[in-house]
Length: 474
Image (cartoon, rainbow, N blue to C red; front, side, top):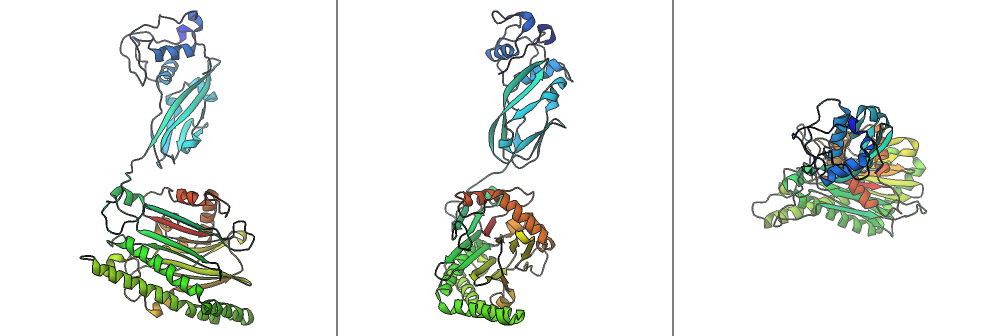
């Protein structure tokens, strides 16, 4: 601690016995007792702090309120902790409440960055949105009466949320979070893509002790180069939707694993791509590719519904609709002159392709609202699994390249885009991608990829506390 000399007659701590203490234990002595060999006219501020902590100052009158320099300095010597902050809630503290006016110009504070805060020297305020729980040690320093002074203080960041685990005996248990990564081309030498995904339980579910309803699966078939990504959001109103989302993503993974192993699927798609390269007939190309995808999707959805019905039959009181869940799927691979990308969706959430180098982004799904405001459809909704309905939901894109293909449940899309109109705004997707890339290093050689993606999903958005699942192809 730096030294600060204050003449005794300028730092008035004498008086009666009405003293308020702040985390400092003070003995019943008087300030007339000086440290040995310390002149009265050159009282050391460090010695005063030492005396306070050792209990050598007492019988002091509470300093007068207002902008009294001695009163503020006395309060500063007494305090060991600033007013506590709440994680993800805006924090604002005016240091004028603590530091004498004459010292504000030289006031500095370090350690705030660890808590997600910063000091604004123009307004003399500590401000920001704390993003980490814990107790953070700060160092404050300033000059007063021509001498430097420094002091250590703590800032505690707390949370008002509860994180309650689901009951141990709950049917169809599921982990509160999950993540995975497929590193296919670590150094981007072969022109292939990598994939990462994460899923976290929403704060509202954690507060109520409910399980995570979202799920996902990623797969890559090395022999043929086909990728599959699927994310699913179990309906909040359905009792066993957590099991519904798990069954759906597993069936999609199983069916497409078999499909990719089949030589006919790849040959049919590549034949359609070659034909398109020759005749450039967009409509024929989309029609041909769509028909290729209908059969495997129909198989996967039928198997999913069959599993729901079988499970419902073994659980007392369960019905098919208790397993209601959404589906966001992308199947894609590299071709001789680009990438063929199939997408399919039932329900809300979003799929989008980003080409940041060209400043372009496009949504690859149709937000699937029901008959009423705020309603969505699920794979259990009547008619969704018919071939005609499946055919209408398939989108086909053939592109030279892309920077990212993103799939997200509405726990991410609602707070980040807020409306269906914004989901169709290319600029909003570019902004989202740049924000994501700023917090998650989208490289195959990133050993912290999964952890960074999980941490990103902890972002705060008032009123948006649903489960969050995000899959990124890059």
